[in-house]
Amino acid sequence: MMYSKLVQQIVDTLEENLLAEWQLEQYANKIGYSKFYVTRQFKQETGVSIGAYLRRRRLAVAAYLLLHSDEPLLHISLTCRFQSQEAFTRAFKSLYQLPPGKYRSLMQTIHHKEDKTMTNHVKGWLLTGSHPESYTIKVDDEIFHTGTKSGYLGSTTAGVGQFGTLMQSFLATDWLGKRIKLSCYIKTNNATRCGAWCRIDDKEDAVLQFDNMDNRPITGTTDWNYYTIVLDVPMDAASIHFGVLLIGSGEVWLDGVQFIEVDRSVPTTHLLTELAKLPITPSNLDFYDN
Image (tube, rainbow, N blue to C red; front, side, top):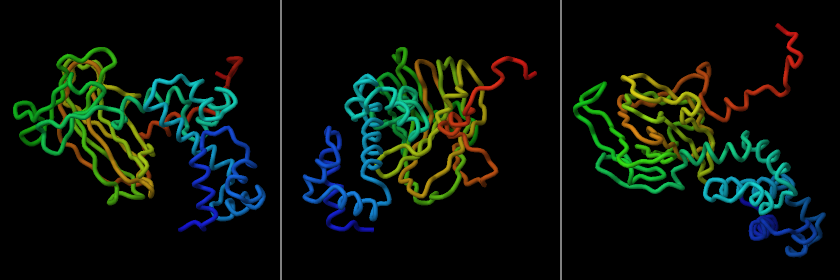
């Protein structure tokens, strides 16, 4: 759908002054129409109010700053024109289903846009992470579970809090509207913390679904085990990213990776969904309910 010339002008004006401390009258004056006319035409064509549009876009800016900067939450909330950090936290959690601090810690761990990338010698795969120079990847033809080879990710000089990932990306086109299961076998040696991961993004690189096994990490030395991640691929998805993640030191082997479609009876492992299952209200506060 193409916007009318007026509504496109409104959108352009809003975007150009997204973080300005303006009232609606100032946007309308910039466009050259009354605020009532501008408001009515925008809502009629877009289905949302100008205030709702600005709020959602400012929250998107906040999400970007959380991922790509170390700015404190208070500064981000004020930059994005929220009256307080508390108001920002409520609005952000309502849209993204996570408080901003938790969103930052989870997403920065896996979001490859912030990470440095090193192409390496495993065809089709990339070595990325916070410090890819502290990790190495290779094809291992001595340790494997299925076939005759596995993918290897190992720490060389990784420190606390650093991570590397053996990953790749592909278009979501063939999976739109489907529930997919990523399955694989993983073996570890002295791993600080690791796991499989998968993330689904839209065309703006916004995260729609993801799971990095943060709630069920693999640690230490383990033999080959079977792991799965189940996510829904929304109709507006553009790309799928996946791999194995190693936080800190150790070694991890990946083998037998597969993607299949599953029906809706198979529960998803989407981390935002899991966190959203918390009860709305506390219960049994007097401990009488046995």
